[in-house]
Length: 498
Image 1 (cartoon, rainbow, N blue to C red):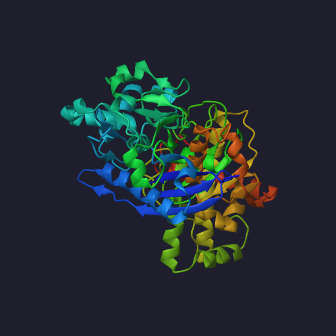
Image 2: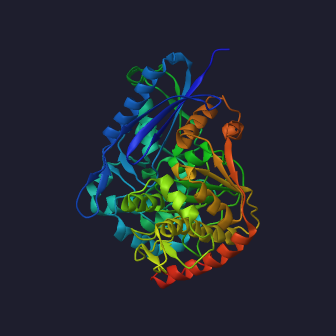
Image 3: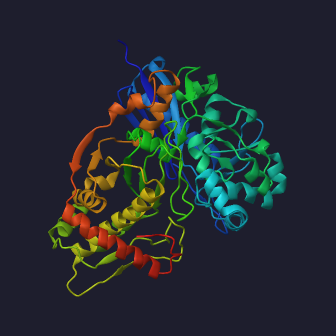
């Protein structure tokens, strides 16, 4: 039987990755191209939509050239991208604004306005906290650039823009897939529709907002021009795609309720899948996002620089990760009162910018191994606070285990700490690029290669499992409570409960 292939593309903040896969998830070829962030005054951080589109063209073209696979054997393409930013397009789906990055803070006054007028209602309807995302950014363009706002046919997400450019769609065909709804500020996520009350409250015309699509919907096919530039067949289907975190969880096989998902990367992301939509109004911490799997939600929270803290200490002491793990594993295992605060740029979930990083409880007896162990512990203690909120919001949930991806999972001590602190088995998953594989799965679903997204879940491979120690779990339950108290003492708003 002739082998068939899928392409998955992941457009991140610092660069674009593209991967060619077999339907079994085997990686044939991967490519990467860096992209630039553009910094301006007063918190302005943007990206050039044309450069981003060019990075997609370049990485996919390199795939077709390096793989040697005949273009007619590639069935479809799926694409994911960074989620909280937005851009405006005209009738031809060309950008009339830069890509307003999730890092751009110019919309901060409109965040305050949205919280004041309808903060709880936004969380209740969208599932997301009011932050530097679509809603405040749309209001910023409307308030600060009214002339340009009038020229905008639709506000779209980055992945929607890039897929539309590949297919030659028009502005009236604009869409947003439902994994982005918690970032919109104006959606009813549970019903997958725009909310009339929220749009009316902030004077946003629904005509400026795109239709809501399923991530595996076939939104178009490659135009002749684009196909030629990519080295692919004209008319090849393109899936709607989704946000990068949704693609990552799909690619890692988070396909049913009760699965704890850990992304041990630059940002440390923690989620617990559920079939219930339960917004976090009490704590203002959890983002209740939709999974690409219809009917499944992936409530999540994250530390903006968890992995960066680990890298910072490595560079500070001039040791390798392996040496640091050996040192941390060699210190006394008793759980002590040394704490690390990993929020070097302020706490993200919940939004408490006044909290900053540091060590607490240092003594003359502490060595580098103790300090490194406390850094790893701090990330997991923060996870435990998220975990307790998720269990409070959804008491009926029964976690089946932790499934981890990312560079941090190479640290055995880190994995064991997560098992001990959370009291769950920790499974390290082997998947090179979870996001690009997730996007490829959506492409396969769009053309009928997979009967369902769940049907592709067999590609997940557990390579290591770490079992929790009940004694250490009990001790870490006490330490988690003390860690929460320490955070509140540092000036937090006190919404987080230990």
